[in-house]
Structure formats: C-alpha cells, structure tokens
Image: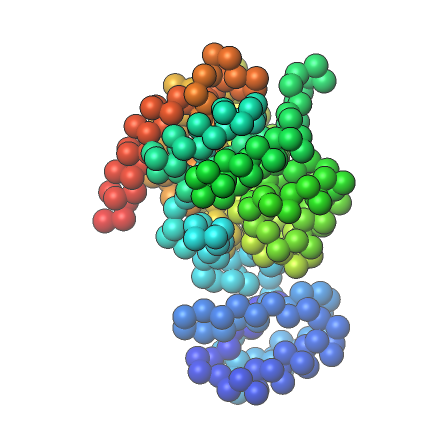
Length: 334
C-alpha cells in the first residue's frame, strides 16, 4: 500500500501516522521527494482501512500495490535513486563507466589497464578475482590474490573497485571492495542476496541468463528487504535462439526497468555480445536508450587473455568509445 502525504506535512503528525502503522505490525518505507513524501507499507495491509487513512488531514491519496516487488518499485519511491560510490554517482542523471579486464591476471596487467581506462574516462575499475566458468577446467581467477591486486590498482589510480562475489563464505575478503557484483548465475541465489542485503556496500545485480524483469526486480527486493537500498540493476543479455552472438542484449529492459523501478540501470555490452567489434555499437545504443552506466571489458592483450579475450576492447578502442559515449550523452541531454 502506498500513502502519499500532502506537501508541507507536520513532522509530528507524520511520525504519529508511521507509529500507528508500525503498531499494526507493518514495515514503513519513507520516501522523501522534492514535492511530497510517500509512505510505503510492507506486510499484510488487508487490515488497514483505506477509507479511514484517506480521510486523514495529512493524507493526499492511498492506493494498493499489486506488484510483488515493493521496495524497488517506483510507486514506493517516485524519484530516481542515486547510488554513491565514493565521489562517483550512478543514477538520477549521473552516468558511470566501469571498465577493466574480465579477470585479474597479474599486478602489471591490472595496474596498466586501470591507468589506461581512467585516462580514457572510466569512473570505476572492474575486474574479476573469483570467476564462475562453465567448464571446471577453465581459469577460475586468482581469488584472494586477485582482490589484493585490485586494491593495488585502486591505490595507483584512485578508481573504486567493482568485482564479483560468488559465495557467502568469501564476504570477509570483500571489505576493501567498493561495489560487489552479483553475477548472472547467482541472481537467484537467495541466501547470498540476503547476506549482501545486510551490508552497506553498493550491489551491482546482474540479470540472469534466462530471467524475466520481474524476477530481476524480486532479486533486488531480497537485497533491499534486508536493509541495503544501494542496488544497481544490470542488463547483460539473455539467452535466445540467436546463434551469432553470445547472448541477446535486451535494450528494451532499460526504459522498462526505469518505468518499473527507481533503481539505476546499467548495461554490460561485453557479455551480451561476446564479440569485441559489437561492444561499441551496443554500448552507444544502451547510452541512447537511457542507461545510467556501462560495464565494459578492456584488456591490453586480448589475444592472450585468460578469460573472455574475444569480447574485450583494447585500451585505445575503449578511449575512442568513451568519446563517442560522451557525444551521445550530449545529444540526448538536449
């Protein structure tokens, strides 16, 4: 249930109303906008008398929400959420580019790439330390050593770190990670989602390989229901009948998610296509579609990359793409 309060409501009366709802055993999510305050009631609202609430002096309107996702619903939170990562902001008109290699391979590699992508305009450094691979024989990442190398790259460049968490048991290792990524394969690992929901760090939640937008939002709800509202949604392509690309990039998800949710939405064109030459056009298309950011794989030697070299841009190619992204953003702002 959503209750919109009238502008300029007395703080004491607002608190009295919230206390009343909490006495009924309901959770109350308060969203303070530029024009009005919205209260979102979470729990069994069948016992709430809508007509009585609507008759209160401070209440403007009351409506029930039929969707199963509540806290990430735009009806609960009309204004865009802006997720802050240090000085970097994502969402609400703020655009961020996260760039770096699929996997961390050595100190020289990650530091060199970090410096290159920062010079080209990247705001955050992405790099895999723990790698979920389809084959058990493929490179699985440097794990804790990889996290340590990412920290070195951060110290060298100042770029915040984005990297993937695969297991609850590894959470203590992620203390120095700025944005925790939940990969596509773990989008419905509900135990993991609940645990990262107890953290204060921003969570980058990737859409599963064959999951609907509603399922993605319900996964975000797991994180938010446990106390962490710093969630970034990521469209990374879904599995379809197409046999020429790794996945099919669902760009319609960007405006649809913005309509359904207040959370920032970014796009990963690298995993979506699996082909380096397709990354740039899809990144530009995602920017034009209104994405709040991009997650792009960059490697200084793609031919010898230990993971996903075929979809990685070289630093020079990334620099050229970053300029074109800025040009697109200038156009869509006007």
